[in-house]
Length: 438
Image 1 (spheres, rainbow, N blue to C red):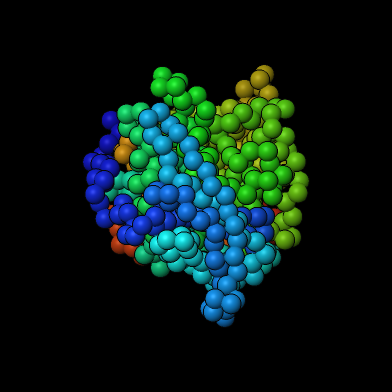
Image 2 (tube, rainbow, N blue to C red):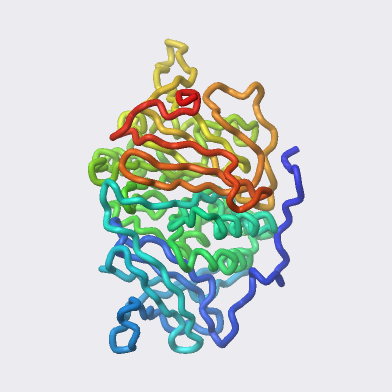
């Protein structure tokens, strides 16, 4: 019922899964933000022949000689999952970087070195522009490859990927074949080694499989992918926050406890009052399971988390919430459903200019196919929905305006299928729905 077109994983001998040549050459290289403010980067990679060095060399364009290269030491990790043993997973944090600066870095320095680069964000401030890419539920199919290519070729030139969960879909294979974690890491390296991907945990990261003796949730994901959660005062890598340019980004965990008194609840309750909108006007939330979803697939799965946290999102005027999970695209109006108190029957979403826009971007192209079964008629809170694979761009211009565009894979790289201007909820709280501008 869900598949409109074939969504087949690329074969293991695909060029996008190519193992880099050379003895113990680093592979699956990826980076993410390594602190709260953007002056730190976590660099991660895997070696397979032997542990090798966990050292990273890094330098700017103005310090190319070996005398001026800086050095950071990382740590080494491995894990076992059923009959699979991982390669040697390295994580290294480099700190105290200059803002808005291109850095080159080198890993694998003892055997087959490989060089990459990234650009740090500008210093945090209210009018600092920044362009985020939005990708979710990517997987490693031929459609996944189209999604990543479209993002790379977009004229908007995203600077940071906000990834809303469900990475490799290794759990779709017998015994959660963790070799598909390795192929996925090599697949996304072409982007993730050069710009930070901000990670959200989805249900396909759980890898909870007691039938084969695997009872530790998130084991492969947690070992392979790091987040700067301690810098955000979090006790778990699955919920945390960062500041980047003019945005304060909060990442939540749909599959970790969030009821009252739980660690995630307590952290978010303390985190939201800390957001300084005069410093970071744009308040963005990432989570995996959507709260507003008019597709029959995963319908109302996010309801319990919505009930716990939506009042806070309205109170603190969150600008936008990005989610995945549903393998399609949808953008809501600014709505809230917070009036219900068990006896008043007032449980219909209402227009609310203090509420966020909710965007489902779980259309990355994974093996499970598209969710094309929608509730009918389309509810009033749903502004746009379509079952197509793609990605989105959220481009902050200043403290008052951001431009948003969704791109379908079947269109040209520059074609925008759904667009809207966001007016900031703190500085410019006017009705930014398309109906209001017609």
